[in-house]
Length: 164
Image 1 (cartoon, rainbow, N blue to C red):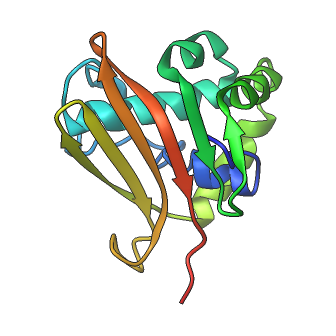
Image 2 (cartoon, helix red, strand yellow):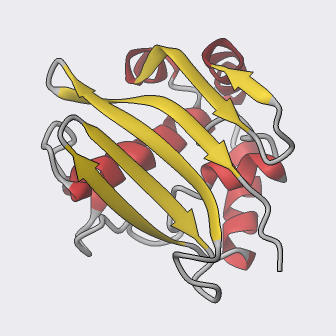
Image 3 (spheres, rainbow, N blue to C red):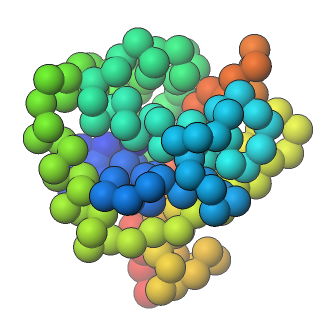
């Protein structure tokens, strides 16, 4: 969640959750909430990305601080960069409030997404796309993770607007 993570553009970032209303699906079709996030698998990357969204919504800055690498940057669809510090500050504002959760739930209901994960060595890329356009033509955002110290850490995110 990452960044253009401010509604409505914030939802592009927060679209990493396939749904908040039902179980979070891991890349292998399992429940992301029951996946070992330290594994070097697509399911683990999906679970970490889902955890990220939940941490931003709930203001879990402690977890975000550990997961986001110091060099982390997010480039929004406008080309504007958002720093790690800005994401942490925004997440802190969500603590003790369900306002962001309600906004994200509403947005996700009208903007279905699917994801793909590619892992090469210690690097993983998770991309979210519009299922009506497909993974090659409808990419909305991608997050790059690096596996260090037994955990996946976010390094970079890129968001886009789909054009015809």
